[in-house]
Image 1 (tube, rainbow, N blue to C red):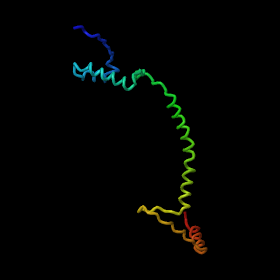
Image 2: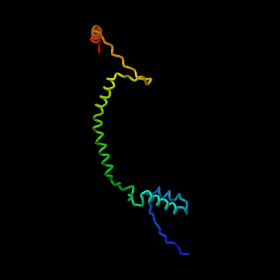
Image 3: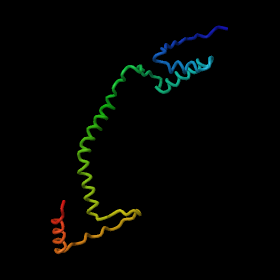
Image 4: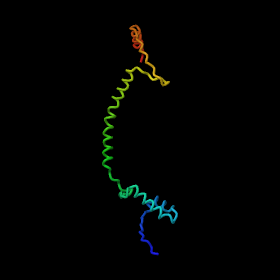
Length: 136
């Protein structure tokens, strides 16, 4: 019986950069490493639809995705005006809530705010005199 043609693949790993891969490889039982490597390669082919995606080493800077970079720049540009407008927007919300005259109660219900007590002229004069006499 004739032997079928074979191809051998060699992988070079260094103990400084690929320690994790070497430990994983050594943990595989002998006799199953070939099948595991074939599974890994088939998974790669399936994930990348049969194409090749250049893999750069961990020490090489990854190329910049211009679409993603543009998106980040647009979002960062939006943040500054949003933060600048935040105090004004919060003031508008507070004024709106104050104009409604609605107060949230602790029970979760809504209670109508009571009108402010009107102080007569005699009471005003009495309070002013008390403030003048106070020693701060």
